Each structure stands twice: as structure tokens, then as C-alpha cells.
Image (cartoon, rainbow, N blue to C red; front, side):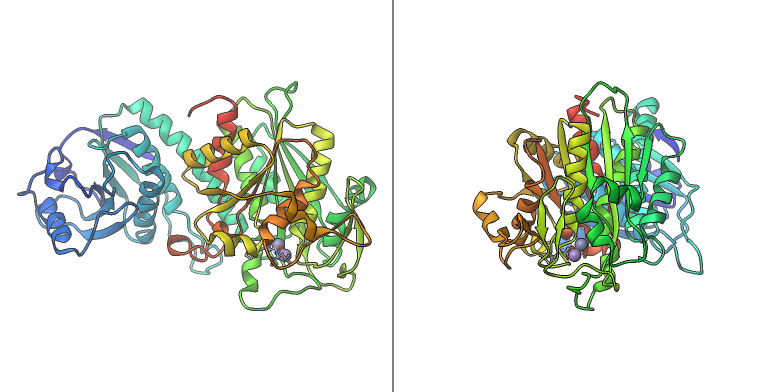
Length: 494
Ligand code: BES
Ligand code: MN
Ligand code: ZN
């Protein structure tokens, strides 16, 4: 993206879209270079006065610019009433604006950020909003993509060129990672199976310093991944375990990230109702986010050793599918009574986590998964559930989510919840009764973790059925949080 920085008067800049932040408390005419006689400010004041638009946090509206303003269109961005910038909602508002104009002839964008409280952060959120807003989910439309990447950006700001360029590069790395996660997790089940997912990982990782290892069915069987194989056996698409390694310092115990990669979840023999079943193509989002994080941290050259693990299966009710009542043996020897074949995510995660802990002796492990409908019932679509056996690690992850502009909420892990997983014939059942399903799923995972400091993110609500902007397109939840988490552990602030 070509960037010009100017401190000249925005009113005279000839541009296709002017991004113009407006605060609830100070009227537009109070901004430098503005005034009640200025046609755009007069229009904004009128909109606010009549109550037709309120500059609340995260809101946005697109107008054709009034006569006397050199811009063609104006995207008003609501800042709310607080004097400090709310990063996440600023980014969302920019993203919404850019997204609505995706197929409009917008080649020159100008943003007025010189009067904002934290210009660096505003600039970062602006770039992320633009990159994320230009993402086009319509890849299978025969009319082709309408998004044109060649456009220029003018910033009305007092930031210097070098700093801005650096922010732009970092935002692009992060947004590329998020957009790749969004694109892959939205792929249809017939076009992306475990094997071709590995192909995508290889393509994405080529040209980076990431190490890649792939286990196929035979090796998984020899090594004893009994739970993962039990899920996979109902589909003719064979499972994979894909491992990416970012290893700037081989001596160091790694951070391990594990992402659920169910390329399609029909439920298996415990088959799901048909309404909305097509959304279960997104059940590989955890793996997609882990892939995104690994690419971003490698391109950002973060100094920590990180291993990303993607267990990949398809959960179908084929003739060889596992049945309710089966007993399978996990990688670590635990015997599991299968009660519901639709509780498959925890099975593949359990094997992957137990293997990773044995092999890498990590300093900590974070798993991320679209794990339970119960988590959607508990928290809705705005926060993902966070479960942890270690308070410090949990606090770091919450801090990372905050920095990344994503929302987590800590959930309980009391031992009483484990009672419903007691089996009469095996060590554990793969699901409990109806109640507290997000917690019992986390308790199941916890039993494969041992003493390793661990966090589990259940993003079933935040990654699926998103309202508003992301409706129908998964948002790549978790990528920003986990990149921030790795930065935090590496002691890097930006
Ligand atoms: N992939 C689903 C969880 C899910 C549900 C994600 C709704 C997004 C939206 C998971 O594999 C699943 O089916 N979980 C079951 C567990 C139950 C059988 C114990 C569920 O939540 O119903
Ligand atoms: Mn399921
Ligand atoms: Zn699932």
C-alpha cells in the first residue's frame, strides 16, 4: 500500500474516501482545521443534532461528501465519549466502512487521524481495519473478485514516514494472518479435507523459516493416537497431524499452540440436525488460527520458540465410523468411553496435547477450538470462554486478548464438574450430561494436561454465527490474541 503523510488541510485533499473520526463529546467543529462554517462539519453537526447518527464507539456511516468538500465520499467513524481510543471498536468501524465500499471505485483513501489521542495506535487500527475490510469471501463466485488491491493512502497526521511504514508492515503481517485464517476456515468441506489442508499449510509456510512435520495415518496408528483415529475412521478422507515450528532458540522449552481442525463436523453417528449443518465446515477454525499465528510470529521474527499443532480430521458417519458405546485408548493410555460421537473435538485435542507435552516438555500450552454449543449458550457471540489451570498464564492471555482487541471470559474448572464424566467401564466418558457442557469439555481436556500450565479457548460462539460484519464469514478469532500472547511472553511490547 502506498502511503503519503501530510499535515496539510484535509479539506482540500481530492480523495475517493475520507475517513473522518468523530467524537461524542467534542463537536466536530472543535477539531483543528475544522469549524462550524466548514460544510462537512456542518453536516456532521446536523446529523448529530437531529439524532440521525450518533458517533458511538464502533459505529460508522458513509455519506457522499457535501459540496465544498474535496473528497468524494466520507466515512464517519464514531469514537464514543471516552477520551482514550477504544482500539477494537475503531478497527471494526474502519473495517465496516471499507467493507461496504469493497466494490465501489475507491482507489484513494484519506484518513484524518492527526487530532486523535493515540495516533500510533489509531494508525495501526486504521491499517488493520482496511486490510481486514478488503477481505473478499466470495472466492467461488464465477464473476470473480471485485477487490482491487492497488490503492493509495493519505494520512493527515503528525506521525513520521518511517514509523508509519513500520506500523503498516506489522499490520499487514497480522491482517494477512487473520485473513488467511478467515479464508481457510470458510472453505467448504468437499474442497478442504485434512490432506489438502496440509497442502495449504505447506504453501503458506514455504519461504518462511517455519519447520513443518506431517504425520499420516500409518504413523498415527503406530504412535497410538487412538482417539484421533477413532474420530477419523468414519470418513474416507484420511487424518493428518500437522506441526509447524518457529525455532529461533532451540534450547528453550517452547510455547505450544494446539488448534482443533475438524474439516467438517457432521456429528458422526450421533448425527447433527440438518438445520445450519453447513456451518460445521468452520469447525477447523482452531487449526486455521494456529496456522495464522505461526505465520505472523515467523514474519515478525519474534524471539520465542513456538510450536503450532493442527490435528486434522473429518467427522462423518461412514460405514466404519465409531459408535456410541465404543471404548478407545488415547495417546497417553487413558481409556475413553464414547458416549456421543459429536463430542469429537476434545478427542483429537486430547491426543495432540498429550503427544506434544511428552515430546516437547513445553513451558505452557494453549489450545483453541470451536468446541461446544454450550459455550455459545453461556457467552453468546461476543466473548470466547477461557479455561485455565494456572492463574498467571490465564492473566497473560487475558492481557493479550485485550491488546489484540478480542474478548475472552474466564470460566470455572472446579473438580465437581468432572463427576459427570465418570464411566463405569473406562477411565473417562467423552461427554457428560446436558449441563455445563463447556466446562465438562474443558475438564475432559484438562485430564490430558498433567502439570503443564495450560489455557483452553472455546471460540464456538465468537467464530461461528457472527452478527453484523462477519455474518456468514468466520472472523479468524484468536490470531491477534495469540500473537500478542507470544509477544508478551517474549517481553516485546509491539
Ligand atoms: N463443533 C461442535 C461445537 C459447536 C457447536 C461449534 C455449535 C459451533 C457451534 C462440537 O464438536 C460439538 O458438536 N459439540 C457438542 C458436544 C456434545 C455432543 C457434548 C455440542 O456442543 O453439542
Ligand atoms: Mn461435534
Ligand atoms: Zn466439532
